[in-house]
Image (cartoon, rainbow over all chains, first blue to last red; front, side, top):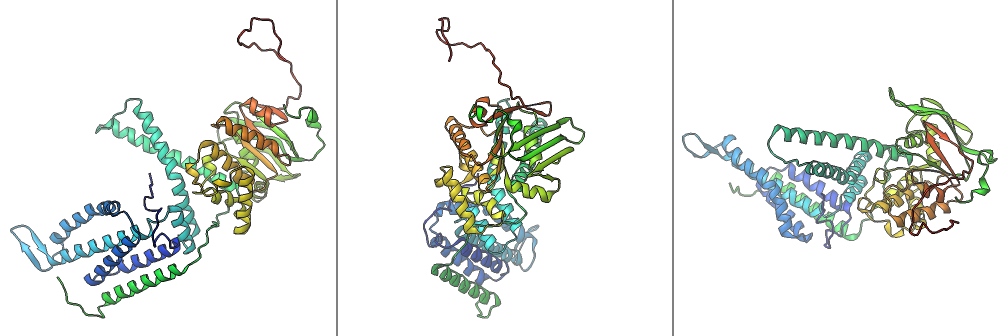
Length: 257
Length: 254
């Protein structure tokens, strides 16, 4: 169900502590999200591509993950130029394509793809458990960390239960289709899954109480920064500053569009 | 049955009762009576088995003892102290370890070592102490290589042993084992039998419907019926018919 394809690997990125990678990804995500100019976004995309190559990810597999957002971006490219107005570039009797929409669509495309690439390079290169511990060391509230860890642990069991119920339906000749009977069956299956998951959650909570759980989460993991962690954070910091300078247009650049 | 003769008068055991249940009753709101004025005593180093069919209230009994459920009447006495408040039960749970029927409910961390260390960390141990305790317990159960394994990828038998490790890491005085053999392969079952027999300093209470397992791990076997524990100390001679090859030839069973 969760493959974590990229979590095992040998690359300069895999050698960084999960805390360093998470910190860098969060920092870049905030900066990219607040940018609107073309130049800084192109720089961010360039940085993201450098990170992907540094992480030595299988480019084909990474590319397939990018396809996930392609449909969403396509929709934006269709809708925004027609609806956002601005100076008219092309029109016929009932359609008008405006400059503002194209700028906005381009901005969103650059933002989503560079962020996705950064998260592929920095976050998907660690296991979910590592991510939880990294977030814990970055002072994410313990309740959320525990929620992430336990979700990760039990999602496989919940899938198992779903498969069991689907098998049980199949051996009684259930055929998925578009009938009311079929929808009712799926509704019941889903309802049953909720009930079973809730019951399991109660049993797990009881087991936690039996081991003196009092709402506090203690992590065993400790991270020690090595020289490569400082070097990497330095690189990310320089990239961030360059992007911010570009955004503020302290260095004036000719407009391309 | 192991050491049957050394403990043959169990209810006259002079050692202090670690745990006593007095007229314990339980039913869910508007549900049928599950436990009906049940009386029971567990002394130090007692190894007691309860043979009971499914649905006789065995798990309910265990959950009442550790305070996950509250009795509708009666009392739980631990180390001569009546336990009623959640704060008291918290103290009790440090010394009474419960092995759940379903190991998956008990292992909630991605890796084995994190799961085993969870209890000691909650008890206020430092990281290094918790790791030390966890490694020792895993070594004692021959699970040293399991420390970094992913819990949900373990087999059923491995999960049961790791769940036992998580309970033992709390360093309990009393163990409650709820159907410990459910879903176990032959090899793990025998490992579990050997392990339980090595726990000479602990008291434990095992519920199981596998009579053979109980005879190999406990000194006394009680039964549960109509919400009560029946103490049957008499030895019974009984006859039963059985079939085997060449059974028609005159022969003896020794």
